Length: 361
Image (spheres, rainbow, N blue to C red):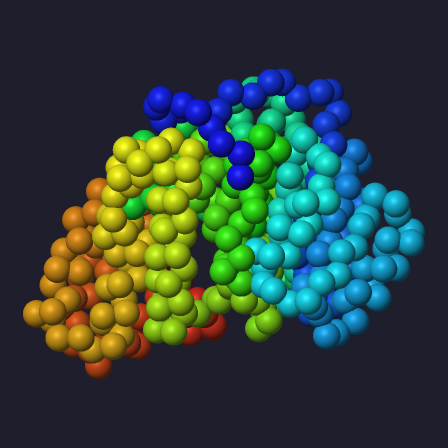
């Protein structure tokens, strides 16, 4: 990783981009022959055409490599790297090493871009050289490509220089979308890559959680990609469970360790120590409380967890009023009632939709 010599926390200074910068689209693929064709087509159909596509196949056992190889033969801008299975971070590292673009765009092998995605992302980067991290909204789709909801995934997106805020809330930049909506200038990527390869999944979290410490975020409210939920996802789940919440906690802990190492490497020990604990991370507080309730931990032992959650300064930023209600007042529900109400609020299905409509009325 490149070293930055600086005396204080501040955005990295970058020069202006050329009129038509090369964009490197990096894709980690593992057993997504069902989706990778649609994913690649969504890049090839972009209105902005100065790009390269580097796909790293992470030891797929399906027909993925044959599908990708057919595209390589048709378009010289596409490159396929094949390696043994090592996880998402190792695949992204391999793809990034082969990239040459001034802008790096992540794309999951099962997601889809809208046709003006690259055009709008390049415009955003070119509008101000201080923007090193560009994000945008996303739509959620199922395995068949059907919309799961008619509105974008986020009501608000992070923007601006939020490093100090992130330091104070346990390292969590609020409202940052998933991988296929993340793009960084190469100067920023050089400081973040190579990603720690212990991240066999959730590797995009390292970009989301490290970039805000070194650059300004520019957000595009428009949904420019489709984020797919399906049974094969390693990081996506429509319905929350104790297992998924505990896995999420493990990811937060691992990312927090990486943030501290990153801050130490870039700014020095003083700023590494300024990173507050995970107990100030709203999403961590949220997950810890739900785990305690769903596991039936006695009220006396979970009171402090609940207090940290509802007193968090960002508690009311939760977009769902039903979630806010359950998290604040659900403490008065007995365990036997909390579990089914939780499923209605956090689960999926026709019953959940019906209850939401009833509550809305």
